[in-house]
Length: 363
Image (cartoon, rainbow, N blue to C red):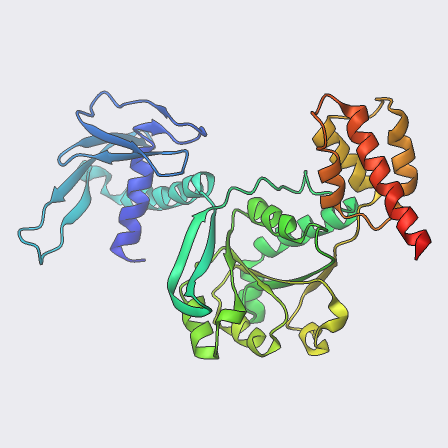
């Protein structure tokens, strides 16, 4: 662990003594001993940035012992020299034996705070006219999908959640058996069956960033390795699955604690070597909308609860699994009118499903 890691952990921890980081919109609670702070809001992020001024002291208590942190900022003497920033811990000499325990406490607390505060990011490689141009560029991941909102088979959904949770908890297991701490998923299904929403739900569940890797913009293994070395751990690398020649390079170049997700609209067209053990851990077939999926969408979009009585609701339940209607198509029809106009929205979906049946009969 380098000095910068300890500094960053101390900075995160000390700021909790100034404001409450547990709330989504932090409630500033200025320490009485603090004289001056600079407070700003991060661009496109719902959190405050608090900067302590030089010489400020923050008081903490650990195991009923009073400790004081003093922030020191030394501006650079010239343009070529770096600035110096550090925290000085002040403690009575008789308590020096508990310092290392206290610093371990700070590291653990900082990790927990960063996990709660983490703003997920969606990364894309910087490219121009199909040529890789340099580092990743990112925007906040603001996709609202969660496993609670996904319109997919409940048993399959629960299986994916349990698999993700098991993967996240098995760092020591992967180290012990000598395997890279990675897991590969292949999502197979027609457009509109929820592949992108599932990836977003996985990211929101794990608190992992997403890297959208466009393999068509990459021309050799060295370029792929250069891109992947600039990705962070605790992330999902997502790509189309068509380029088998890059798959092994992708696996070998990623760091630890990674989920690698491949997507395809037609698994029959894939090279069978892609599915061999060691390349793909899970194949998830994304189906057309089922009865369970419709019920969840109706609850989310129209606020229909168990016990509500709508004539077309039961008729839609009876026919939806005999149609090839994607969850995206069903959701679109449930948004035809205002949310209060439940019957009209159900009517739009029912007519859509009936028309699909008529088309199949004509063929």
